Length: 71
Image (cartoon, rainbow, N blue to C red; front, side):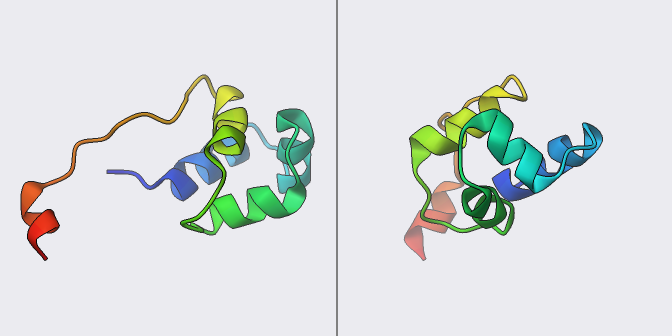
């Protein structure tokens, strides 16, 4: 499964956009985009969706392996 950080970075690069350009178009800060692409685990969901909307996506529930819950 592709990580959110990798998804955003690959989509941004495919559109030949800089992190600054992505931040401006999504209406979020440059630092937010940097942290999102770095895989920061505590980000505002609304802002993540603002970025993902540019790529025609939004955050949603993803099934996890039940065995990973027992660790």
